[in-house]
Length: 101
Image (tube, rainbow, N blue to C red; front, side, top):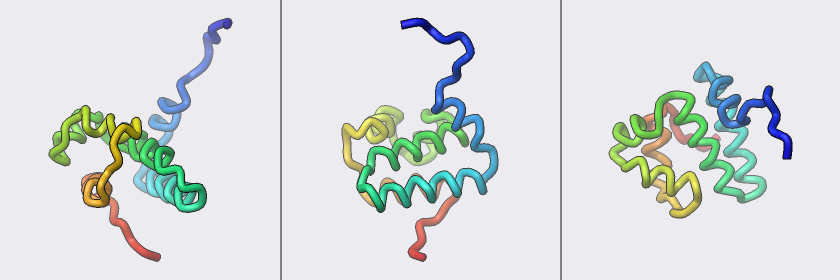
């Protein structure tokens, strides 16, 4: 397969594009809505990973929430199923609230 010279990794593009809290909120809300519609939690947790990378490094974020980097990555890769308290802690550290609307 021919390697393309002028391509960018989609995840890196999204991480770079998420600059404001408003953009991040819209991205997370869309990801959560998709999860509620299709039940694909992996996709939602992947969105959380992207947001974490847009705001910080995974290592730095893991320290802030009191988790190991490897634990966060195991959640992102769906090797472990997160507890609700873990999701709440992640949202809290990101500066967002979980709310029923």
